[in-house]
Each structure stands twice: as C-alpha cells, then as structure tokens.
Length: 154
Image (cartoon, one colour):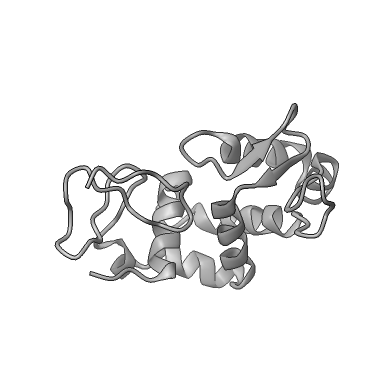
C-alpha cells in the first residue's frame, strides 16, 4: 500500500488536531497555513527556518499564535525546536517538509484533503503504521515525512 503526501498530511492533521469533523478544519487550517507563512526560511544563520513571536502575534492574534506555538512544541507533534525560549523558535526537518507542503496548497485544498474520506481508509498514527505493504504490522512506525523520525521496531 502506498500513501501519497496528501494522505500523510491528512494523518498528520488528524494526529495534531483532528477534532474538526468537517466543520472545524475550515477555521483551524487557515491559522495553521498563516503560521507557517510567518516562518522565514532565510531568517538568519543562528536560527534558520525561524520565527519571531511578535510577528506571529501580529499576523495571527496573540491567542492563536501562542496556541499554535504550544501545540507545535509538544512532543507528540514536535515541529518546533527552541533554545531558551519558544518566543524565538525554528522548525525541525520534518517541520520544514510540512511547511513546504502547506505552502504549496491553498486553504481550500488543505480542507478538502483532510476531509476526504478516501484518504482516511488506512489512517496511520505517530506510533502505528497501517500503510505498509501488508497493512498494520506490530512495532512498525509510520514513515510519515511530517512526523519526527522514529526508530521502527521492525
């Protein structure tokens, strides 16, 4: 079974957020897209692929900016890394792949992708893969490019 980038994105969104049920996605995904648009891939040598919380607050509103910073710093999503403060963080490698994907799509396309039931038939999770050649295999971690690289048990 081979999963497309759209399928991997649908799995990522379902794991990171996932409670839109066809209604919330049209509100959450524009904020996510705008968040990634605020990340400057050419920022500076000390924090490439970084953001400044003041820019995020201005573009998203402070509550939305900080909700997304908090969500993306969490271990289960782990998109953002930071030094001494998450006010000035940067994207991990899988966060850069996610940004490139999100930047390449419109909000409407992203909403359509995460609500497409055909992409939800072989849902994978950060700790379980259902998209391998034989479907689910115990201990095998999904190689979703939008999740941190995890060692596979098999």
